[in-house]
Image (tube, rainbow, N blue to C red; front, side, top):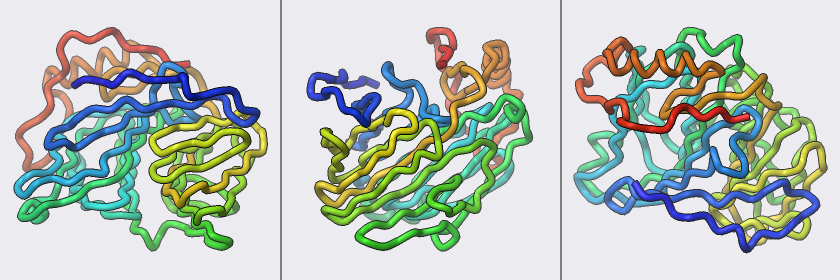
Length: 311
């Protein structure tokens, strides 16, 4: 897997922005691209969000598809949200759940869970598309070892705020007086925002850490134009107004800072380096519960740097 170098030369200072992040790209096969924005050298996390990937948009040829084999997590919740296409989630709790555009899959790993994500078999009979995002939310220290769980919410269950050329679908947390039905363990917000060209949206100052990831189109704020494939992190508690330069789809996210730094290694997140070492040995030794009906898995990576603590 080869990551593209990041180019910061196009970004200047702005009264609203703390930093702008260019994602790293990788090819997952069949020309399907993934863009990783968090963690980054300039910003390791935004609120409790410690990981953000854009999947696609891309097309799989007939017979192809995404196959993320069974792998483990601890200390976090995974948040999967699609703009187009479909994925099939399976996990060690026995959950089998397809996810489609506008829906939410929220998986709380806690003390440990194993899951896979694949293109459903019935979609492989023809060319299929996939476009979405996956985020990781680090759990508060007091909840890092809770029992694993899984929650799915259909598109009709997620609050939608509309008017004046804007639509905000609240995926998780609280924002603009609305609350998502998914149970979260720390103050946060995660929203799918669509603006008509020229429409504007004020980002509330309710949370200390706030950011926007522009998925499509472009948005302007202050002196900056934020193009697609960029994560803009706003300065704390400063009112920010976003205006659509061309009709975009994007993700607004943030929350309160975590209750301390986190170590991140592979798919493991923890406030304790020793806990990550234990998780590594548990996966290597086959001590995680596995997914019923699935026999393959992703092996523990070979030589890697030690866990990195993100403040």
